[in-house]
Length: 120
Image (cartoon, rainbow, N blue to C red):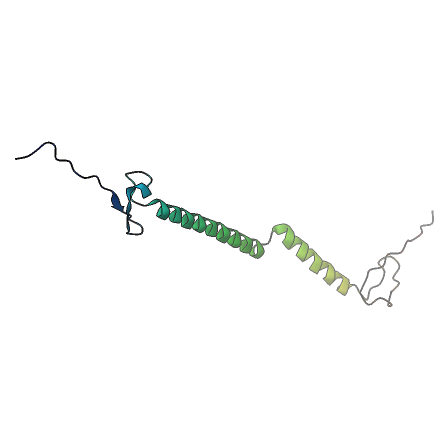
């Protein structure tokens, strides 16, 4: 008949769901976990590496966006430089604004200002 003293042997091994190997129960952190300790560490390292890679990718895209998108102040500076260059080229032959002297010795067109003495 049935005896009450029949003992069921305790499990000593468990199969890891990650590496599919049979390991001692002592290799698992808690009885409810399905992944052995070594696989859990490897998984954490992979997740951390992926997180770092995503952060690097975010920084790269941010730098690329910064290079392609100029600020309004940068655009204003660029336009001002080009406009000033055009004005200098346009007025190269005109000479001084106040007296009309021309400075032909310089290679770069420059507007020359002279002091004009006013008689009182």
